[in-house]
Image (tube, rainbow, N blue to C red; front, side):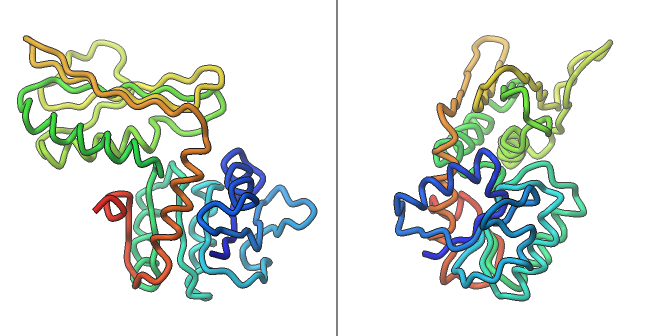
Length: 243
């Protein structure tokens, strides 16, 4: 599996490069893209002439649209694993997915995918519960709330569509019965912790996922890339891999 890595000089890009060097899932990195540049690094996907089977992007949501524009030209499947996309950017991803296979997920961890399923089931079974999400990450993370917290909230809303999110509650604001509260903590070098708390008034259920290293996200991205090869145009997610 020949891979082009976008965001190659970032934390996740380096993790992914290390796995490719070890031949994980038969992956070989044939090209690297990063705006930071450097020896053997292309500044854009358009500048990278390597023949590849799949693109994996761990850069920044601002790079998504030009990346996909070039990927569509090459008919190159793409794994988009960045977060913080605007609604307009998401719409462009959906548009590109009509032409090429795109795996789009805010989190490539299998454990998080399992957590999302558990949270949905719990929300359905505990129909009147107050639900809060607390997400904790390192102090360098740019977006808040995390894409994973948003993904978990969306899973909850599949079971309880009447709910809406209240992000960063503050001031005089009594909790409404139809909201999902999301709180963000940024501290030190924490890779990622997500807690979903469901409280019925008589009992509390807490579902927690903790990432111990970034390697699991790189492994998940390679699994997604392997899954994507040979697929028709469309938008795919961790749910598709699990099913």
